[in-house]
Image 1 (cartoon, helix red, strand yellow):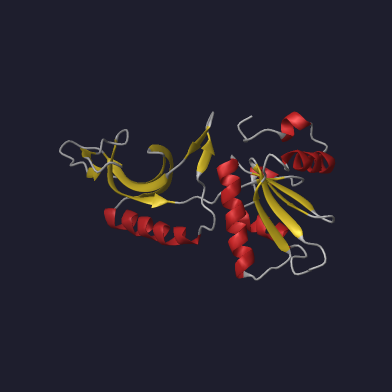
Image 2: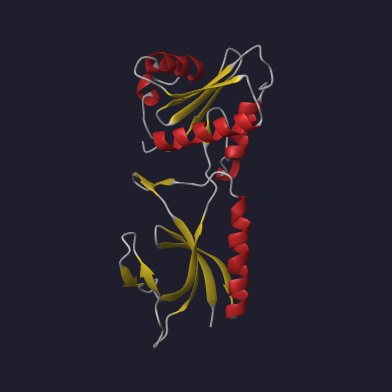
Length: 220
């Protein structure tokens, strides 16, 4: 018998994280993964799968389905009970919500081996000269883009959609407040009145054509 801890994405099998020959060993690993998962700082909430869709990750302990297996009784989002079907050829013995760290594209950064930066790198950008009161930096959402800029600095973080960019903006604002940083001006989401000027700022700093700048998600 081979037991597995598997990662599920919106209820579908994503990958196997751990294999074990005993139930005790696989559940030890499962509970350790849950404990370690508390360290995730900025969890992924959307994925790009032909469209930008909400995502829910779980880890589950599974075993090969055998005759006589009892499947779990669960409740759906409306409180109605149902019997959980097998996951392919596997029976699920236990599951728990699981978070994956979100990653970003940051303008001007190259990514070796496909590794993209996490929120830690975004915070580094935010903290550059953040204690200087001479040049206040503005932080503002332009659809799926988060701008961090002043006369001396321009950084642009590309998020999957506007909801993700707004969530990042609010998270950074909380960090800045906790650190008592006075030189950061969090502007929220760009309005119709100022979005044209921000398009011009992006164009001047990146040289991107305006149709590319106006994109509202990373779906393209």
